[in-house]
Amino acid sequence: MTQALKLRARPLERRRHQRVKVVVLGRFMLENREEYPCQTINMSPGGIAVMAPIKGRIGERIVMYLEHLGRLEGIVVRHLELGFAATIVATKRKQDKLANQLTWLANRHELGLPEDRRHERITPRQVNVLIRLANGREGAGRIIDLSMSGVAITTNFAVPPGTAVTIGSTPARVVRQFGTGIAVEFVRPIPEDLFDEDLQL
Image 1 (cartoon, rainbow, N blue to C red):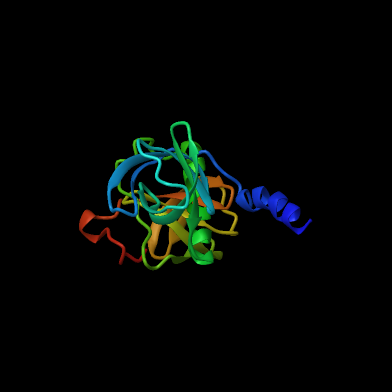
Image 2 (image 1 turned 30 degrees about the vertical axis):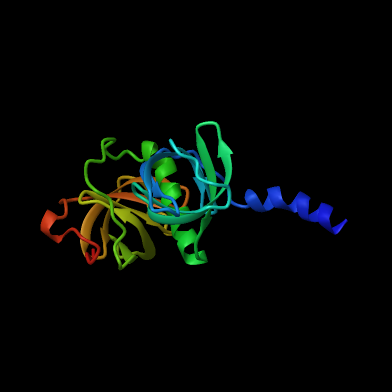
């Protein structure tokens, strides 16, 4: 009976996080240090499905480098027709950050930002920011990622699209609201020589 309960619990554990359809390119490294290209099919903070030319062994530990999401560690749990599925091995803090990044990616086509996204997106070391309105109202937020032209922020501070805001000390305009926050476009793009992970808005 205990074994039956364990067997029934496993699918629930596997799907504890909601999967979202996101398509990003990347590469992954197997335990033998060989690298291969991959493309995500869907993912959650706890798991990922990818298309890949090599599937890896069930139980094999992998390291993935994905566009917009960075470095992730995982374990191959099953093979798919065109690739494989893996659990993501991460701390609670890393999973929370990944959840915010996935929200951004899932909503990016509706955020009103340039579709080509030629500007690289990074997550700075200092992610906590103050959002200020012209009337003096203030709210706290956390940066999901930013480019030279704008930033995605998770926040409970309700700011409608079109509103002029100051993010830290950087003038901007809210472009779109999404599930857990806002997308913002800077009044003036960040100069390329200042754009790195040490940037403070």
